[in-house]
Amino acid sequence: MFDGVSFLKFLAVIAAVFFLIAFLQALRAKKTSVHLPYQRRERLMTEAEGSFYQVLELALPEDRYRIFGKVRVEDLISVKSGLDRSTWQSARNRIKSRHIDIVIVERKTFKPVWAVELDDKSHNSATRQERDSFLDKAFEVAGLPLLRFKAKRSYTIADLQRAFELDSVEPSSEESVSVTEQSSEQSAESISASRVDDTPERFCPRCYAPMARKRVRSGKFAGAEVLACSRYPKCRKLLPVTGTDPVEGGV
Image (cartoon, rainbow, N blue to C red):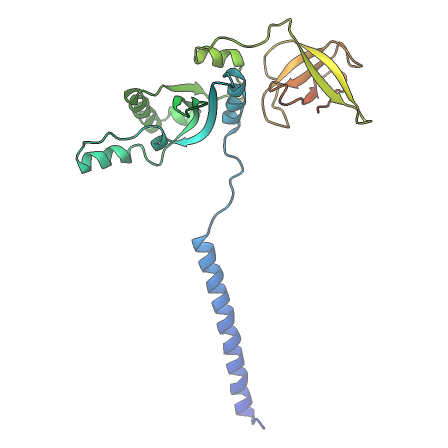
């Protein structure tokens, strides 16, 4: 039998054991949070970078080029051999931990052809301009063209083709584009839409490419203007234009 003092000592030991267990669990959780303090980023590219990427896919010949985003500078240019260790390391330190927004490579060989930087307002600072100037010169010496574009919400295929000195492959204003709309009965109704203009109105909610105005030439919405994804036929998303019939669809 426990007397009063022994019973209190027993309770104190039990309390100490529970406290120790709780302390060890808290310490383990703290170590986990310290060593693995990670979370997924919301997106790989900014809205401007994503828009540029989508339009660039349309502007470049698909059979000749591939496009990559967020590429390390060291994966594109490297420090020449033959330098003393200190000079070599100093030169490497200036390019490591940096990346290029978008890189275009030859489709078959993966040889870099162009590097692309999208400059937003942060590039207006003196420090950033010095960094940009260094990268421009480094890529020029390495023989890899580095093109800069002002970051904005939308881009046109023609503008990018001119920048990359490519022949235009855009359809003419008279060329029609076939798009489809899914009806409530799940049957596909085909409608033909002619280009109204190439100015993107908004971004496609399905693939985030710029939307372009089209005028429906046949089907139950004939004569109405719609917004069609610029990546057609890869994406067939349609949206209504304010003030027109309530068209929304895609396949």
